[in-house]
Length: 209
Image (cartoon, rainbow, N blue to C red; front, side):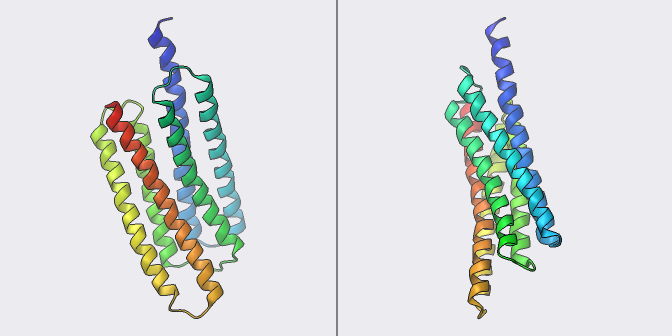
C-alpha cells in the first residue's frame, strides 16, 4: 500500500465527520425556526433539540478520537480541533437557547426571536456548504464568499438584537425584561459562533488552496 492509499482513508474519515456535524447543526437550526414559529408542544420540540445536541457531541468526540489516533491528517490538527469545537459551540447555543425558552416558561415568541432564529438558520446553511467545500478546496473563492455572507448575517443579528433590547426596555415588567434579554442575547451569540466557524473555514480555504 502506497502512502497516498494510506492517507486518503484518513481524509475521508475527517471530512465525513465534519459533514455529519455540520448537517446536525443545520438540523438544529431548522428545528429552532420551527420552534419559534410554531411555539406549541414546546417540551417535545426541546427534547428533539437535546437529541440533536447529543448527536453533535458524539460526532465531535469521534473527531477528537480520530485526531488522537491519526498520524497524518488532511488538515493541521489545530485546524481540525478548532473547527470541531466551533461547530459544536453553535449547536450548544442553539440547544441552550431552546432549553432556556422552555425553562423560563416563555408563553409566546416574538418578531425578534423569529428573525434571529432565521438568521441562525441561513448562517448554518452557508456553513454546511463551506464545510463540504473544504474536502477538496476546488473553489476557495466560493468558500470565502460564503464566509463573508455569514459575517454579514452576524452584523444583521447585532442590529436585530439592539432594536429588540431597546423595545423591551420600554416595558415595565422587570422579570420579562430579564428573560427576553437573555434569550435575545443567546440567539445573537449563536450567530457569533457561526462567524467564528466561518473565520476558521476561511483560514483553511486560504491556507490549503
